[in-house]
Image (tube, rainbow, N blue to C red; front, side, top):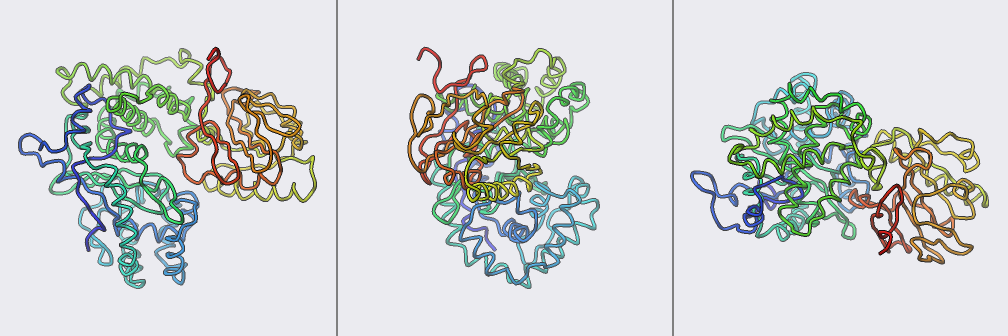
Length: 561
C-alpha cells in the first residue's frame, strides 16, 4: 500500500532547528534547490518525503482508545476523531489496546512505539522488515513484548479492515500533505542540515499524524543506511479538521526531530566527558523530568538539538529573533542552551579544523564541565515566561477560585477548573482547587498558583501584588494602560510568583465570572502557549504577546519608549 501522498520535494524541510550551518552560505543553499548534491550522493529531492503513514495511523487509532491518548494526543474535537469512534468503537477493549496500555505502564511510550511501527511494513500484514534495535528491546523489557504487540496490532488491523478506513480518508490525508508541500516548496533543508553536521542519511521523512500531540524523531537502520523521520502532530485547527500548515512549526519540529539522528549518537559516544558536568543537571532535574527528559544524557540531547535549531534559523532568516528564542528555551529549563549556542559560533568559524560536527562535540562536552551554577545570570534561574514554561516547573498547580459571588457562579468555575485539572493530571501535574479565602492562609513560597476571578470577586487576587502591567477599575480591566470593558473579555497571563521569583504564577481574569468558563481550555494548540499573555474578546483572540522584562519588572514596552 502506498503512503498517502508520499510526495518528494527538493526540500528537506523545516528549519527552526538545524544548527550552525556554515555562515551565510547556508541560507543560499536552502534557497537553491535545483543543484544536485556533489559526488555519488543522491539529490536531496530524491531523499525527502512527506506522508501520512498507515503504520503510524494504525498506532494512533489503537492509542485513541487507551489512557495514553489523554496526554499523548491532541485534545481538540475533530471529525477525524468522530470517524475513528464510529468505525472502531465496537472494538473498544481489543487485546491490541490492552497490550499498548500494558507497555505504557512499562515505560514504552513517546518515541518508542513510533519507532517500533516503522520497523514493519504496512498493515494488515505488518511484516517485520528491520530487526528491533537494542533500544526498543530495552524500552519494552524484552523482545517477546514487541512480538506480542506486533501480533496484536496485526490481528486488530485484519479484524477491523483497518486499511479500508485508511483508504476512505485518502482525500483528507492528501489535503494535509498538499498544504505542507506548498509551504516547503523551493527549500532544500536536507542540504542545509547535511552541511551543518558534515554527514548525510539515506532518507529524510516527514510523517503527519492528525491525532498526535508533539513529535518524535526515530532513526531506522536499513541495508541502505539510516532512514530518519520527523513524526509530528498538527499545529492548529481549520474548522473541524487539523492542519500542519504552520511554517515555523514545521521548520522547528522536522529539523528538530531529524537532528536527533545526528546529535544523540555523538552525545553517547562522548558521554564519559559529558558526565563530568553531571552537577549541572541537579537544578534543572525537575523541569527536565516533567518534560520526559529524566536524565542528564537525555537533557543533553535536547540542549544541543534545540541550540542547533535556533542557530540554523538565525542563519536562514536575517530578522530571526535569536535572543528571544534562546530565552524561551531557558525559561523551559534549558539553562545551558546559550552556552551551546556560543560554541556553535566557534564551530562555524573553525570548519577547517572541525569539518564535521562529530569532531566538535568533544569541545562542547569539555566546555560544559567548566560552567558554575553560581555564575548563571538571574534571567536564567528566575521564571521569565512564557505560559508553557509554567508546566515544567510544576508538579502541582493550585487553582484559586473566587467566592465573593453567588454560589451558582462559584460552582460553575469549580467544575470548569476540575475539567482543566483532569487534562493536567494526564500530563502528570496534580491540580489542587482552593478558594480565595483558603489561598490567603497558604504559604506560597514553594507553590505554583493559577488564580481565576474578576477584580471584585477573588479576594486573593484583590490583595496579590502582580509584576505585570495590570490594574483593576470599577467596570474594567486595565492592561498596559489600556481599558478593556464589557462582556467577553478574558486575560490569561503568566508572571513570577510574588513570593519566589524562581516559580511561576498565572492569572485568568475577566470582567464577568461567566467569561472565566473554559479559560484553561481556550488555547487548543501547544504553540498557543508560547506567549506570556493572551486577551480574548468572546471566542476570538484579540491580542497576544510577550512582555519586556528588565530588572524584575514586566512591561509591554521598554521604559522610555
